[in-house]
Image (cartoon, rainbow, N blue to C red; front, side):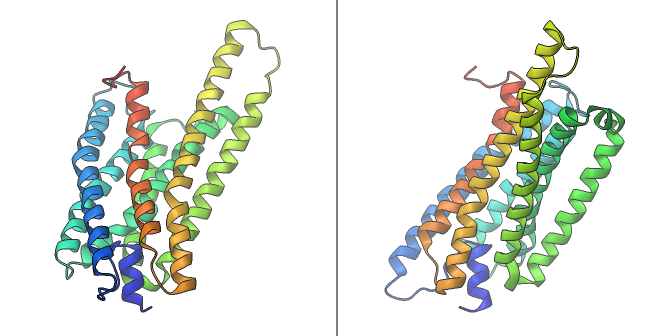
Length: 277
């Protein structure tokens, strides 16, 4: 398999061959991709926009405490808009540059901001003094500026180093999941321990904060696993067998799209803005 075929599989999710024996399956794959991309664009864009509007207007806990969630929603809007270019790349195969550039947003943007959210919860529970020291908005702005810079560098890396995209994806998954698992275990240990001199209501409030942090980190970790495991498996299969298993790629794509709705649903639930509630 050449570099261009591998790139089409990992980034554009398009089929590398159109031989007579696979025309029917390729047509079904393209149809499924169009449906998934269209659903993400029509559903994800308004939902993430609504979350951003709630955070900016101060409906929830305020911009400062939700600043990482705000940037994650901005990243998710970018992922929703990327679907436009993916749809165009399916209809017009010559359009490949923009999806390649924006693929760095997929590989790097979401896991970075999810890791920042997990680290923030970890510091609030395990190192509260450090958390209060770096709680002002300017420190969060610095962290998000660094995250966006890394994401931008990832975009150019995906464009000019296509042959390492599967390895790049696997490294991102391992780093992100390791960071989140570390935060998860640390918060779980803190949740099992009781602080000295705690009584009654204070102890209940602190335990509630710890349980909430543990739940948020756990959901992020499970979401990250659901996102990257199918893609990592599909990438390894592509490298080892030199062929694409369309069902694995489609499964990974569906998992990635659906996982993008976890964050806005959780925020809307906390803000008591879910219509079903």
